[in-house]
Image (cartoon, rainbow, N blue to C red; front, side, top):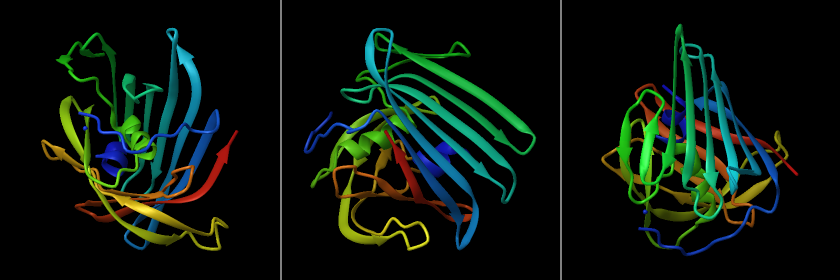
Length: 227
């Protein structure tokens, strides 16, 4: 199981757009397999520039102890205006195995570090930038975007569901939120799960859920730090 499995495994229709009101943000999550806490997840965003473009530097680090040791990381450089992924890097460490892969997006082509090349029209989002894209757009009706991960192109439908109340508990001192459940679906089929995004100006991904063979995996926000 990798970061994409937990996290993140549209022609663009824009219903609502806002800019992140900070230059740096870190989100900290507890990971649960069923009722058991098995690890932690950290998502980071930094406003910066790269090759003369305004971009976000995004990263995710996942650590888990059960059922076996996992230490996975995902990093991407994404264009600020539409979250197109210009560069994506993934490192997977699971048990005794380790794999690394990366790609650049250049002029309609996705060029992997191992020499594999894919055409990409329209421009892609990787798994990490895709989840941040969900934060920017909170549509009232279904919309779609385009993604590329694990060497496949995907059409991703964003399917908004009901608005619910979510309490993150007194333990984390985050209080209660109104949140919109987003259920992304892909063609071809992939596992992305559901995300609950707060209906305030920060659009925080409060809870991320996905069903795996081992059971229901949840990432629950416990702390946010921003500048």
